[in-house]
Image 1 (cartoon, rainbow, N blue to C red):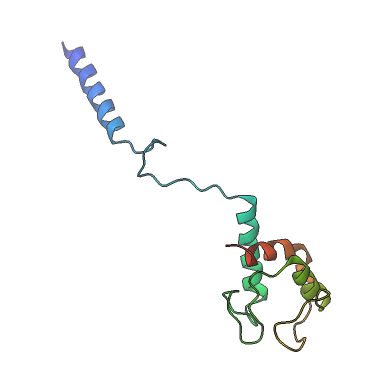
Image 2 (tube, rainbow, N blue to C red):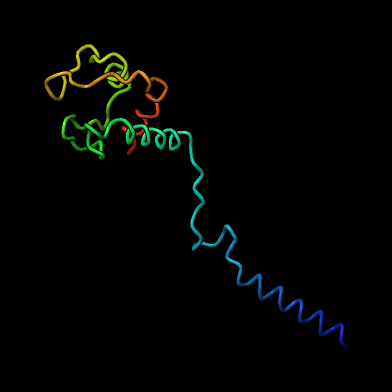
Length: 122
């Protein structure tokens, strides 16, 4: 009889604990787990590159014009390569502002894809 009460108490505890468990993936109130994609990781790196190298002239929000540089949201990879690495514009490109005061940033050559991903993220 004593063993029966212990077994019953253990079963009651297990059922009570499992009823309160909210770790089931079928639970509609649990938040979905976000697994970073390659694009989001690249964009995140580009955001850091932009913050560390661009916002002194361009706006922290790339959709807005900065104090010196224009808005850069939606920039093509060709434009980024030309401006950052050579200080030029791609053939046929019409600059948003007159003058070519932007210096070259050859140290960003390996970060152009990341910067492009950030500047073109929705």
